[in-house]
Length: 242
Image (cartoon, rainbow, N blue to C red; front, side, top):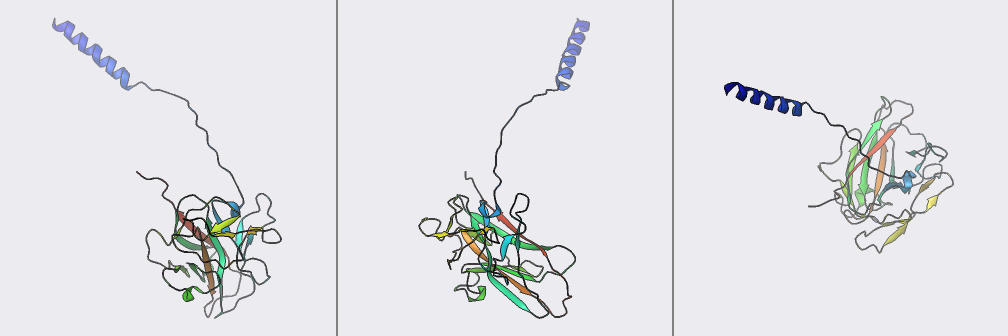
């Protein structure tokens, strides 16, 4: 009787052991899709406003606008020298075409080489006035970058873009009501981007766009040479709720 009981327990142990060592393999599929478009036609898109020294938009395509040559660049133009400042109150605009709010969490600068960063950047409401002259500085204008350092102390949101209407033809000063459209036509001559010529004021949390002021502030003793880099815009959106 004892022998039979031991054999039974051994058999159970073998079954359990074989179960823990079993491996399953399966193959399944799921589709996906997305579209590649021009930077001025994307869901978070950039538009031009100010002209550079050559009378072409500061914001322009760095190339011939063919496939693979559509990267955007800010062409500030001209030659600068020490102790000089030049400010573009609306070097470019950021437009949200998503159907929900999008938060700009930060904007930063990465230089191409070892050269110094002399840029100061703000987001603000009115394209044709200096940020310091906004009706309510600090709310209608926020300094986001200051020559190598973050220019604000907000943790999650520098500026909130209202929901867009997924139309690349316009932007909206009041995204909630959807009744104040501003055209963003195509500039196909030299810049190859969409732009605006209207002095439309963006309202934080309401409008689906914001203007970006860029100031080049060259200090005394700055070495001669070419300066270049990348402006990085970080955005965040919460697209679901419980």
